Image: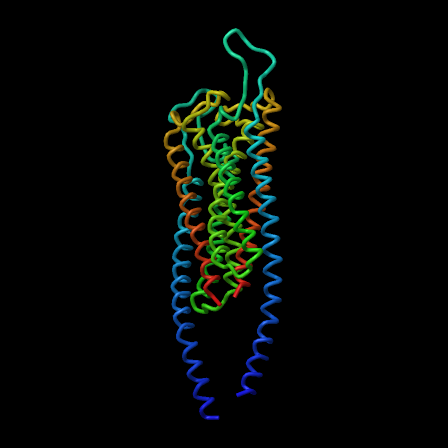
Length: 191
Length: 191
C-alpha cells in the first residue's frame, strides 16, 4: 500500500509539472489579451471621438445659407459613430471578464463567450470601417462616372478628421482580429 | 499481475466510451462546418458574379457620349469584386481541409489553421460588403449635404444587380461568422 501511494504521488508530481507550465503559458496569453483589448478600446474610442468632433464651417457665407460640413450630413458616418460607440462599450464591459481569465486561467467557458462576442464586435467594426473608408475615398477623389464631386478641396479639416477616424477604426479592427486568433489559441491550449 | 491487467483494461474501456461520444459530436460539427463553408462559397461567388455582370447602357445617347454604368466606374465595386473573388477562392481551397477534419476528428492543428484563415477572410469580406453597401446606399438616396445625386433613377437595373451583390456578400459574411464560432466550439471540445 505505501508503495502504491508513493507511485501515485510521483505520478501526481509528474502530471503537475506540465500543467503548471501550461498554466504559465495561458496566463501570459491572458495578460496579452487584456493589453490588446485596451489597445483596441483606445483605437475605437479615438475613432469615435475624431468622427464625433468633425465639423467645419467655412469662413464665408451667402445671404441664404452657410457652408458647413459635419458627420451628421452623411448617414454612413452616423452609422460609423454608433458602431464604434457600441464596440467601445463592449470592449469596456469585456475587460472584467479578461481579468477573470488572467486570475483563473482554467475558465474556458468565459473564453468561449468572449470569442463569440469578439467575433460579432469585429464584424460590426469592420463593416463600419469599410463603409466610412468608401465614403472618405469618394470625398477625397470624387467620381466622374456618377458625377459625384470631391468635397475635400473645400472642407480640408473635415476630411482630415474623418480620415483619421477611419485609420483609427482599422487599427481597432486589426487588434480585434489578433484578439480572436489569440483566444482560439488559448482555447486550444487549455485542456 | 493479472488483476492489474484486468483493471487497466477496464479503465481503457471506460475511457474509450466518452471519447467515442466526443468523436461523434466533433464529426457532426465538422460536417456542419463543411455545409456552412459550401453555403458561404455559393453566396460569395454569387455576389461576385452579380457584381461582375452589372453594367447597363441607357437606350439613348448624345453625339459625344453614351450613358453607361458599370462596376468599373466605381473603385469600391472593383475592390468588392476582387475581395469576393479572393474569399471565394480561399473557401474552395479550404474545402479539402474541412473534409480532413470530418475524416480525422482529432486534427486540431488543421482546425486552428482554418480558424485563423477564416478570421482573415471574414474581415476582408466584411470590409468589402460594408464599403459596397455605403456606395449602394448613396446611389439609391444620394446626399444633399455634399451634392451627390442619386443615380438609381437612371440606372435601375444596375442598381438592382449591385444591391443583390451586397445582399449576397452579407449572407456570406454571416455564414463565415457562424463558421468561426463553430470552429471555436469544436476546438474547445477536442481534448
